[in-house]
Length: 349
Image 1: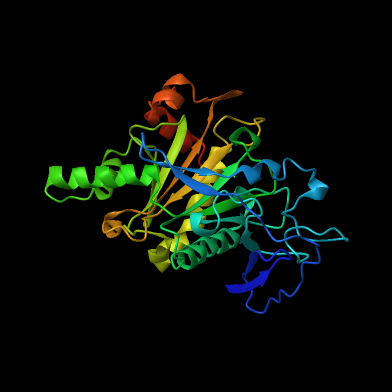
Image 2 (image 1 turned 30 degrees about the vertical axis):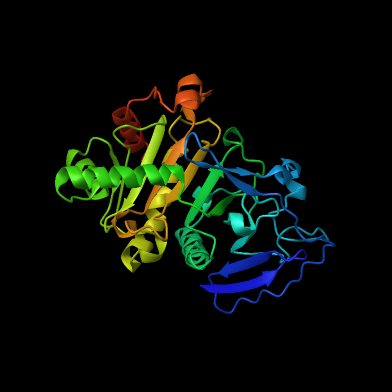
């Protein structure tokens, strides 16, 4: 992998990640952009104990542009986008409309491919492996940021999820705090260790799923994918490396080599859940990594959570009163049935 860092016209950092070591990236951003000005701030909710990012400048962000005006496509034929070059493998750059900025953290955009009409599932294993290297490199870089405590790499796919740019891309958030979801996991981790004489909750969860097998979707030497016992979403898969590690930086070479095939297979199965003729399945894919300064980080387990809000053909799972008002999820699809369906739509060998 070759990494080339440059700056956009307004001072934001942009990084090319290329498979070929001899690739040259020297295009300059000619746009007359003013320096970025943000209003992002973090406010603490005294009642719930969590934090909320207030970012009013995001009201003016780009919203569903036509394909020929996509800001994530390469700059070509006299049209200048967020990427100055006329082609790229993988690109990461600072978000022009960040939810978090400065002392409040950092937001980055990850473009998986220059092909506007592709999706992550269309990538080759080599391309997917390069994205994994970019996620890992950004985690390592942001770990050195004085105001960042946790890094979250994720992808939103589909208009139903709220995606405003159709080009295949994801994001990376560097939070200045431990996120509420991770804090809940850490509390459960502590409680399990106390209850079981020091056993690790993540290890026990994965072992249980591999032993029972009913909810396992895909298992290899280095990864296990399963529908969780108490899945919140209609189709939800958690993917764990066999060797527990706290974040992407600690994955070994064997797990890195096997990841692209495993992940691409899961994404392709998601697109086949509801049968032929259905539009692409909307989903969120989210990497859960340990906070950097937490004393329990070595007990945390890196894992990816992949889920869709589509519950059946033509119908979405909306967060209504119980979910939005009280955080009590009601799932219409039994996890065992979801796992069975995801096994049924496996790629032909």
